[in-house]
Length: 297
Ligand SMILES: NC(=O)c1ccc[n+]([C@@H]2O[C@H](COP(=O)([O-])OP(=O)(O)OC[C@H]3O[C@@H](n4cnc5c(N)ncnc54)[C@H](OP(=O)(O)O)[C@@H]3O)[C@@H](O)[C@H]2O)c1
Image (cartoon, rainbow, N blue to C red; front, side, top):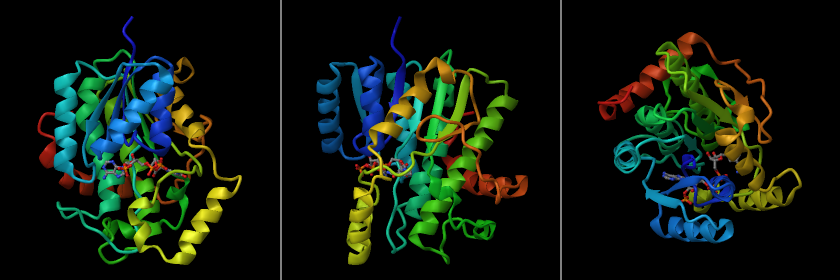
């Protein structure tokens, strides 16, 4: 039997690297995504060596740009006849200066919300060709912090930008968009594809490195101390959980669930959720994604 083919985004570093390694060790066909060719090549060689698995490919795309997300999906469709798993792991935490992408979107929202939504939607036809297609999206416990529905008037935080607010809201919005998509799948009777989300707890990684030069010294010191605390985990723990969520029989058929870093189902805080808020967010995201969605769902 052919091994399952699983795409992991942001696989050259941190939790994504550990996810790819865990999958490779179990003999799966892993497609490692990253945005920097050199970094991905290095990670791929290391994972091949550590796992003894040669069945590992790489793909490159800057996921803050929707045009690149679309090209990535097209490349995957050209190269592979089906996908058994998509792990939306790539994510960013920007700094105190609001950055817009070349396409004009706030970079945290573009990378953490619009991109996984677009990539997932474009790849659902390929995942539908699997008997057991699984989509796992990495959110964060930060979804729960400092959020408020009042920011739905300003989703890209043009007037209300603050880096932790952008990150927290992006991790809330990615949950809502995944649940919305999950609901659409059920309504369309696509039952061989599941969508679940997970929050990895606090794990040491390169998260935030994109904005290190913007951080005051006190914050760099705080992060350095935080990373030494026993509260901060080895990224191997959430990485292994991601791999299990994507492959283990234990999770087969489960959908619309929010898991913690050890694969336990968590009760999600829905304080700011309402069908109206969900629709407002969805409509906004669709104005961004629709130009790239010609032949998907
Ligand atoms: N670590 C934690 O404590 C923690 C807690 C909660 C949630 N998370 C979430 O876990 C996921 C993995 O993060 P991590 O902690 O493992 O951080 P990481 O080590 O920085 O890994 C993030 C990965 O995403 C990639 N990435 C970032 N922006 C990208 C873009 N525009 N285009 C393509 N790839 C991009 C990075 O590529 P480069 O290497 O090129 O930067 C890297 O491969 C993220 O979604 C993060 O929000 C992490």
